[in-house]
Amino acid sequence: MPHARRRVRLGRVLLALAGGWTGAALLALAGGLPGAAAADDVGDLGALDRGLYEMSGVVAPSHPVTGRPAFNVVPEALEIRLARDFFAKYADQARARGAAVDPPGPRLRQVRRVFASLVAVAHRPQLPWEVHLVEDPSANAFTAGGGLVVLLTGLWDEILPEGDDEARAVVLAHAIAHVGQLHPP
Image (cartoon, rainbow, N blue to C red; front, side, top):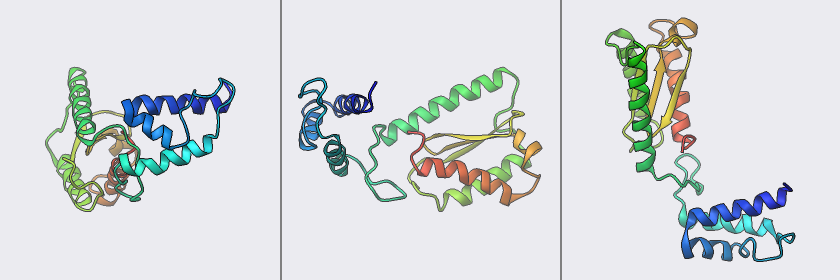
């Protein structure tokens, strides 16, 4: 599909997301409704892009890090709920295969202590931040958004020496930064 047609379809998707007259008004203000012209005449897509960006300041909140409008179609409350729902299923699956979730001990205490110090200065302080430790041989950590961060115990075998707060902070800060930058939603 030619590049210009993909962009027209994107305009139609944005119209559908914005919904009703608001979406039509946004696209009209941005330079016309895609598809109003002949099928091969896509019009000035640059004007459409500029107009949508300018209008996003009206319909989009400011990005928590850059301060610029962030066209995010996932409301924060939904992001939080989806992250919590995801983790509940993930934790159930981990337990079903015999893995511990948040096993008590020095690792969990260390992770929670370092995490608390990082989220105290993180963007999006209003989120219900929480960290979980899951027994898994993979050397990984991830976030599902909404303030939820998960570390897998395989990190200790690969890159996180016991008691090394700085190494743990690097891994946790990386996941926290994804949340701050609105990457999951």
